[in-house]
Amino acid sequence: MSVELRIENLSKTYTNGVKALNNVSLTIPFGMYGLLGPNGAGKSTLMRTLATLQEPDSGSAKLGDIDVLTQKDEVRKRLGYLPQEFGVYPRTSAQDMLNHLALLKGITKSKERRDVVGWMLKRCNLYDDRKKAIAGFSGGMRQRFGIAQALIGNPQLLIVDEPTAGLDPGERNRFYNLLAEVGEQVIVILSTHIVEDVLDLCTNMAIIQKGQVLYQGRPQDAIAQLNGRIWQISIPKAELASYEQRYQVVSSKLVGGRPLLHVYSTVPLSEGFVPSAPDLEDVFFTKIRSWN
Image (cartoon, rainbow, N blue to C red; front, side, top):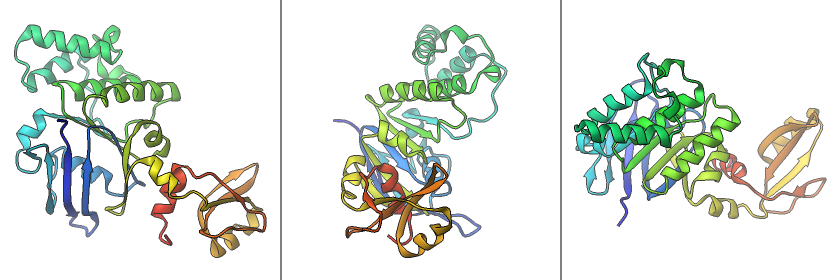
């Protein structure tokens, strides 16, 4: 039976009064799980808590039978973590750094460690660059190294926080192909504010805003809930404020110099509106708008 991560009623308020987590409960199954929310929604606080790097004020989290909050050493043996900021890039080589990390993860036999490190470098397409200093790596190479270090020791839980910042489209695709492959074997939590990443990769997801869970389930189910409720219209710039007052505007983007609006309505709209097939971006903005 595959392991689940069960989070119940996690709360965290910082000393400045910011409520980063507000009674968060999630059940995260085997596979790729998207945690979607705007910057400042509480995603990184939740990730750091699950990675045993900070304490919540209340609540619980269990990885299978392991208590994440009290059995930190047991969690760390089963955890891979790629934080948003990977930290200082050392002048040591990728091979030496992975060897050191493998030793910390308990792989004490030198031949076994050498085999594991070599296999991981090949899997992450870094073998040819294994003797180069990590400090000289490109953004894509650094992210691939981040995944390599996170996967050392065959974790059951892999946490990836905002992973594609600074990557070009080719690097982003290669990174996600690797992540999708990993997700066939472990729990992978992908924390991001990029809607397409969740739609492309994740079979389950949650939307979080101001420390609260607004939706959890399959992306396709969330999209289906908006069928027949999203309407589209192109308007002159000068009329944008008026439309925002009169309608529940989900999103607005400039197309050909004119705002293209997506509007939420449970009843058909006329006066130039046309029906629009909903997508996950519509779901995201509809969930986090205060009027909904």
